[in-house]
Image (cartoon, rainbow, N blue to C red):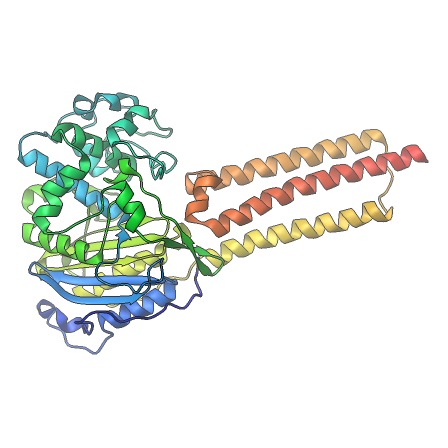
Length: 475
């Protein structure tokens, strides 16, 4: 979903000039764009009203870039809240490891021993806490039961109300699903004997000297609107919060908060035990550990994760060999432009590891929107021609039998087309139109228009058969 909106550029803060040679470990000197220049350009290209980035080391922030405005029209600064999306998962994994170090949680224990209510959700009672952390439980990705913005109870309450999801697979293979981290949040609540918010603050946020918004009311009061693509522009969206989803996507905080956390992770390090717990993802040599993907980029081990909710995109990467971490956040996200936003995070990482940044991939939004619009236009033209024939009396007469057959065929074809569109939307997005409308409102609007056009076209055809039949009877 390509955006044409120009970003309101605002340079805020010091240390904005970062040549890529800022990384002495890379031993390179060049005259490529500064971090501020990269962030300003990419924010404009993806149509994000605001974007913030930090490059930090184990000692703290090393460089900053801030551009644009938040959803309330205020200049982006180091304290502007962003929703962290699936970047939140590494906080949940770190909290679970903290409980494990305290001896109150055994990661090899079956989940149902800690959260008995999970028996309704898990197809295999042998699924362990580690399976949740590594997405090897067999649970499917299902955004119809996650990202529930009206949910204000605990994850344990949410698990109690869930039924077994459709499409669950066997335990053991990596299968990314936020349901794993909804259950992990419930595990943390039960094992820690406190709310998830209290646990993540005590075991991760406070040691990191960081902060995050974990209270639903504070989230609603302080997080500005995000933005979703809408026919080449950006449309504001009031981002909701799922209290049972703090562990998988609904932590929020500033770029400074995220940077302090990343510095802490560099200080904590990645030991052999953590690496041994990583599992293959089936995507080349990439593995998945404690809420982070792990791969080799330009000769360096990089742990990273991206996160998104409707209206917000966030990215964190850790490069211990360079004592460097990158955090970036933007207040725009639509699912159909995921590849373009992912390229922003990847480019910032390669700018540090010694690789070359690449052009952002072309968006498929114009193709998808154009195809839907063309189909709708063809149906409308066809309906118009048919309607003119009916009104002008040029509709050829036909017998009742022929009219009935043609009318039934038109209704059958129309019904099949409606079912095919709805099934295709569900298969491609994993959700119905109501949920898909949060992530891609322009595509969803056109799909609704297409469904309406199909129904009206079928009705016009049936009406034409009725009129033709009456002409025969009148004759």
